[in-house]
Length: 337
Image (cartoon, rainbow, N blue to C red; front, top):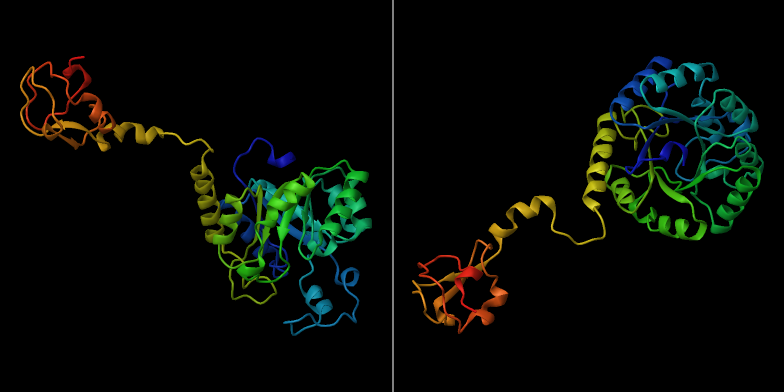
């Protein structure tokens, strides 16, 4: 899938979103710090409060302020876009953005973004999806609050007007998301039902749940980031600090290596100590050349480069071909046929 080609590790997206504080220098500093900590992509959201909410939209459950005012306070300054993209790319990451209007798509397309993220709230906006699909860029489709029928309609729309590569992002649109509402196993259902690659857009606290998503096969992990969780704004308090994001990236890649293959094998590291750690048949006492082996002459001990204990019954009753000192490992060449 475009930027996912030829990589085994998950692709990590740092979602700056509304955590820009309306301060360009602050945002550029966050970009630099998060890129240094392993962000493959750095993502923003492009919207206007007027285009997103009616002023009569009621206050959401758990919120104190109306959505229009909240959105207005965290709008991204569009005059920053070129600077943000240049900063992201100079830091070695991909610039990704979530558009919320047709105008936003046109602006981002002129900037040649590498991929589009569709927010969970926009999955039923087939007009927006059609415009995004026409760009033929990869699409990260968030599925928070979506029914399977909503996802099917969204994919039908994208594939009709694309073609686009689509990655389905398991997501729960709660901020933060309690663990019992994450439902990571739904990723397997999404992949089986729609044949798309899968990812995880995370709003939980900490890094343990995205690590589990990586273990379950998520190709993309998205996580909100901030420089300070105590800052004012809707997304700071559950976001990761840059160093925490880096820890997630490092541990996820270690986890990916640890998963290995589905073959049960003796690993390279184990091979060097296997014969030292396993047991052999050992002389319990001195056994003279020509003696017939009896079970009470023998004991099982490490190391394991002699006759394995599983062959004990096979050598009982056979003569030995040499004098075997007490406590010495018995080898096959010590046994007469």
